[in-house]
Image 1 (cartoon, rainbow, N blue to C red):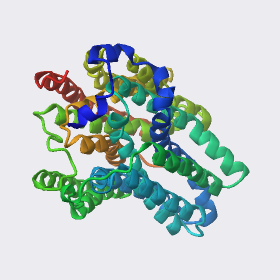
Image 2: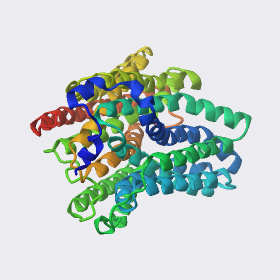
Image 3: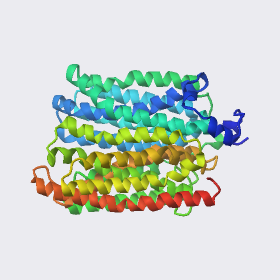
Image 4: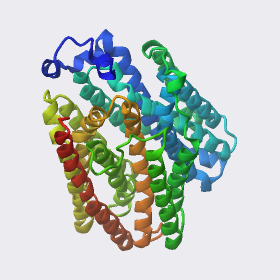
Length: 484
């Protein structure tokens, strides 16, 4: 019996009726409630912890010292989250989803407690490393389990629910972490994830069956290839800290070579990490994964520089700047809910093509805002960018699962949040390089900052046209492969 048959055999309705019958309320029915809470909680661990830590870290640095290590606390987390996500499918195949999730959550708790009890910044760094590795696996497997725990008609609703979690994290995360840090301690902001992780483990024990692959089916985990990919991402992140443009370019070039070689070696391996068609220009899975990677990469320019620009070019305070920045998360969530409510599976797939288009338009509007100084264009741009992700992210993720073979579906699902994290990490370093090469500096005059921001946002907007090409090609190839 194939995976598809195992997943949907208990569904008495045919595909057309199932699509029409899919309702948000079904996620809250006893049959799916525990699964919904578990997967959303897994995503919440990843999302809320990111905002908790980024809010509390500056205070931790003030108490423990080691300000020079502040950026490394974020870098180590991202790098090991990516590595963890890349190992998730192999670990699931070898040990089963249940044991892998429990072990990853335990690793996350150990890392959190190490950071909570830290007496110096190096201990915080080790804790962040372990947190990243654990959360990378949890986030990847929470994606991989969606088609196993839910019938196809509810998968869009699950992605919509996860979009709500991300939007909630964008708002509540900094607010809760800021309150805990200010009124109790930064350690309390770190610790708050531990009870959530404990609840997650209990739910995993309830909903995820005790199962694992036969030893003969298990492949060895490719540690060397994973280490190489991790080094490539780390070099990209480190390049952002280089003051000389020549060194930055050298690090980025070496990192690109390492990543390209790693992908090529993976394709020839008997124990691959990536699906076989990953990054192919001739398969819908390959071009779709390019969209999954490129959209966060281009959007990361706003994540890095939009709040800074609002404060230094328009004179807004931290709260107002943060509020305008959060418009993106609001529209991502609202549009994702609307798209998930569309009953036609084919229509949802077709409109994914609009996602990269809206992203490019939103980035272009930010360029115009910087050029003209019209601040009202900033929330408009953020709304367009958020809508870009909301209109395509969940549906594109489901399409990537649908076009994968049964054998490779776990690897594909696990790569979705992993590529998203990689896109943000690589984008942050690349846009930092472009900005620095354009004269950006902490003590620069406002006009110099404006010039640098115009350059970096313009480059991002122009390059984002590539995501449009990949988006249209993905739908065209999926139709040719009879997957739409």
